[in-house]
Length: 170
Image 1 (cartoon, rainbow, N blue to C red):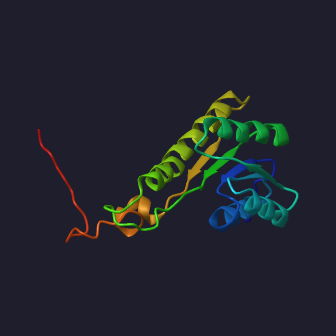
Image 2: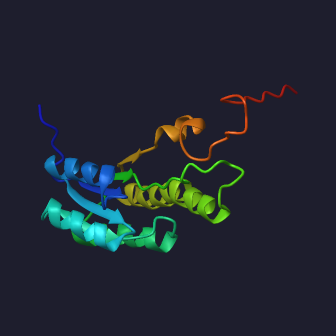
């Protein structure tokens, strides 16, 4: 049985390319009206033109509450509702050893990878609860680095062991 999302509206962040664009294509192929969100205007325009009439692009910065609210507002204006949010946008820290990682880059990674999904989810949930029939779906995408910090992102090369667990009993 084929997945059918006809009459559903999805928002996919980080959809200008890569995994986000593939996720958006999957939603469109299943019949959903899909809003592609990306900070990169050129990547976004290319993805929207490749994915066709069921794709709508909104350039946005997921780290900005105002920009995030604009995504929700534009989606509702264009398609009438939001049913699914896929938090896919994410950044890497260039695999720098923790002693060398640039603080500005670190702050940007935290803003996109943690604050962005929270802002998008908060805005979507407010809409989900306000609908005549409340409800919706949120999917959060994470890399293996989100589960195993020593496999991606800030490295701790100077430690002679792979992981540290600190357990404090009081």
